[in-house]
Length: 168
Image (cartoon, rainbow, N blue to C red):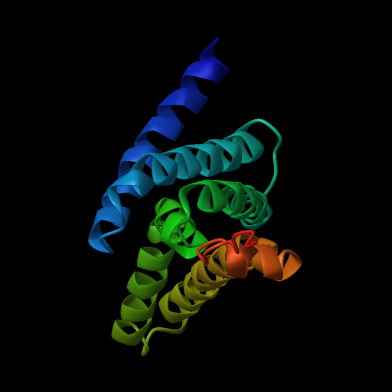
């Protein structure tokens, strides 16, 4: 029961954040529920993979982004809305902000303690770790979300185009 509560809570907060990020880019109003659904599904999947399946953050993020990409292909076609309008705001709650913050903080502390070999080495190690996680997760999110576009190029391109009518 606790697992279901955790996933629903995680998905709900991700949906709110995703729709908030979506509002910045001014999508059509009909896209907001889909953005929320995509953010909730993706973030809840990543949360479940990381916390209950023991998968690392980069692999879990790739799987979640892949799910968001494929579902945005279906929802985009139904809404006649570009996939990117749906999946980019849905991905943003999964950006590893704490790792990015720690990377920048470690860089600053490294520069301030450059004369102390012990401290500078510690901060350099933290910088490398956090920067690597940040870059890897963002790369995984980008590849996972755009892979459906490359796999279904014609379908992704034609989803916002008028379908030809049968003329007699």
